[in-house]
Amino acid sequence: MLVRRPAPGKPPLREPYCLTGVLHQFTQLAPVREGGYDKRISQSMIASYSGLSREVINKTMRDMEQRGLLRRDAHAVHVMHTFAQPA
Image (tube, rainbow, N blue to C red):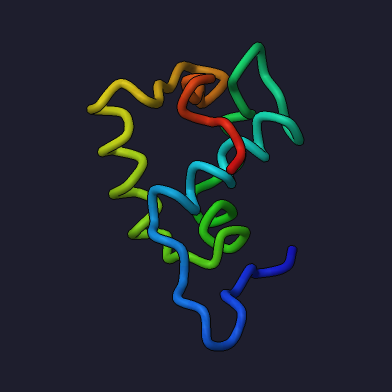
């Protein structure tokens, strides 16, 4: 899996913005029900795919869950469709 890095001279994307795009991609690549992705995709995988640290992914996903933008169940992580629109 390739690690996404910002182009030289460009600032990296802010965590929630970058993570939102990645989570939306996973809902398309590994869908489980509408708006969700397979729970077996680890935070480490998401970190590698996004170029962010696992710690940042964990903190951001917890924040998103508390704000009602993300929910988890036994099989999937669900991203609210209005929040997970690609940029």
